[in-house]
Image (cartoon, rainbow, N blue to C red; front, top):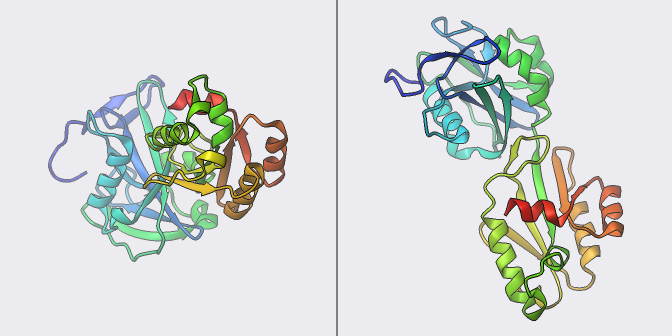
Length: 277
């Protein structure tokens, strides 16, 4: 929030009887790097003076949570929010009012300083030490949940299997059907994938057979299966697996589901994906 009042700048009472700042809800940014999170020490003039929490504030009437969290962070700190790769949103619903924690990471950890009167200090804090800080009470209450969201998601699509679940004549032009599916997947604007309420996953499609020449786009990476598509999917899961990554594979193939689960991936059916498109 800056010195100019915005249309969301007001107190409101939620359905649970709590008093909150933000007529249309509020949002904050949980940005992390290598196991540490960026925290704001609130100024003496702010709510919860001199406690630690996230940069953030009230949303405007038609402002998306991600835009609000990035805007507020840019106002309250010197962080270049263009560095942040946003991976998802965790929502805390109070009934008629909600707070959205926008979670993302940065490839490098920059030095960050206060950007306006609302911030007394800014500090990168190891996640294991956050609970030792004098925390802003709402952030303290949400931290156990939001900490679990310090991850990114990957959605791997078994293209042949998903196409086969459609009765749209895909067999007459497999390349064209795969291209259409790729473009639809690329238009996904957030999907419900744990640990987020809304996730913005890395999108990967495995293409094979007559569709294997389908190329990727800015939003969707395609992986060509030179031999067996199932083997390529399992190899892709194995290559992308990491402690801070949640991998989901979209397929109805029972054997493939078992192989992916053995590599630590979760699976979703084609119907789930088609319902999102």
